[in-house]
Length: 496
Image 1 (spheres, rainbow, N blue to C red):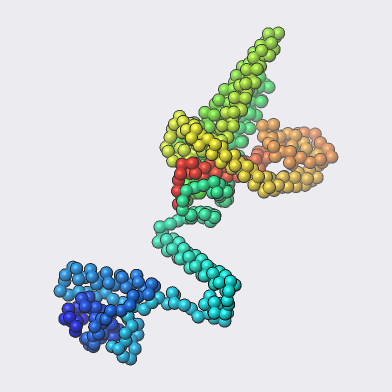
Image 2 (tube, one colour; image 1 turned 90 degrees about the vertical axis):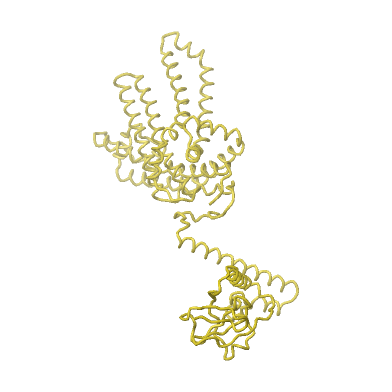
């Protein structure tokens, strides 16, 4: 519908199908006169008089309307399109209404208290006096402000999730998970988020169990060949068993480190499959770092083995071994320090490789640089994480493990009788773990061993490694999550 302003004759147009039956009040874009229009045409116009400053709740709407009108004038068309919202239902005599067409939002108007809700802040101020009334008023105001802030945050979060802009992985509902700012030592308890996923724990357990089985199998073969073929061959295969274990466990640890870093620190979902693909692509870096430390320790073991073989020489051998023993002790101390350095660097090397794309040598140099720059902080963070994780698992996982294994030992020992100890006695020494002592029980006898006991002992040994693998998986996931957080702290990363 086309019409002219009765006050200043400025032409306007408005979609006729959007005009309600009761009419519509619009404002002229030039003189701001209020014009009442219906589908039959202009009914009346009222010049705009200066009005008092609108309330704070409507200031934004008033500014937006004024800006839109001014923009239409600046363009300079002869006919301006009106974009106004329908006014509230007009009173019987709309032309004499002095009220502005945009009403304040109802939610910012004072609400009358109901009987169920109790007295409002204003009512409390009317009925109370002195310090008690002021305190009650402050508490009510703070509660209302907190409720409004919480509702606003919830609405924003829901809007972002509905639009697909933010996707928080499941299981990350942890205090300060959505907070902004730098990572600090206060975030270290979030290391336990690494174990808050059963599939992740299952994959890590399976990987460590396979590494332990491979380690035990090579050691078992070395013990057999060393006793049947040549003694030193057993020592060589024993060293090879440790190399196999370091490679297998290092691969599993790298996969875990990638997954927990992406999930907890980067706040992005990551699967074990993605971790395996990433580890394969960076295998030289993720395995080269632990192998460098393990290589030093194994080299010390080789030196000990060679000196031990020299000690077999009659007469002179023991003398030579005694002479070089001080150097051997110093070498053992050095190997121990390297093992401690490996313990402190293990949780950090995966974040370095992941974020800085470093090779094996560059990763070692970067770790050395971090410890030179943030030595005391890193030692405090890593040591604090070890103490925190160790204490938590001592009072949770360890009692459950001891209780379950002891129950198994008691029931199985009484039920199987002498066959129980005979089967455990047939367990290969390479498969005996610290958890084996938890299943020992007095059964009153020892049956004569046969092939059934031998085969049963092998399977029992394989099963005996499962509790140890579970413990390694839980500790490893928490430790590598702590390492990712520590790296974020010292490098000044922001929480997402």
